[in-house]
Length: 160
Image (tube, rainbow, N blue to C red):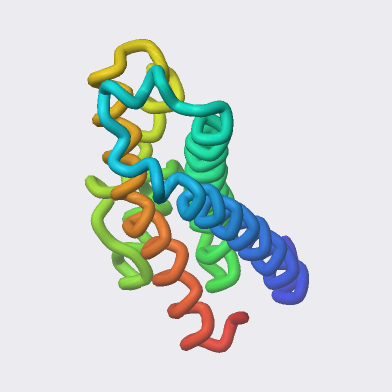
């Protein structure tokens, strides 16, 4: 069993990772801004720089969501002395909801599904690609909210 100090160190490391992904995701988002909205006509006519910025956004969105869902959720509960051993992702999410740290599993699942669709089907069909890229760009705020809600809770409880 890890000490409080060890759990808090792990939690802070994960938070730093999430904040790095968030910073880089937002940087890519700013650079995509002049190209928005991405239309089906634009998908195959994007400049190399625009493609790089979109790819970076998708990559960082994915990394941030993975870090939050696979690491931060568990680490927050561990910092609260909650048992996370052998808990499924849905059980962990449900416990975070019960504690009113985060909410709306359906929204979280939708974010993950959209991200997976974009990552696997990007650049195959211009209509679908444009729609999914724009949707993912719109969902940025929701992903950020999960991280911000956790940070607000942890600060309020004086854990970080």
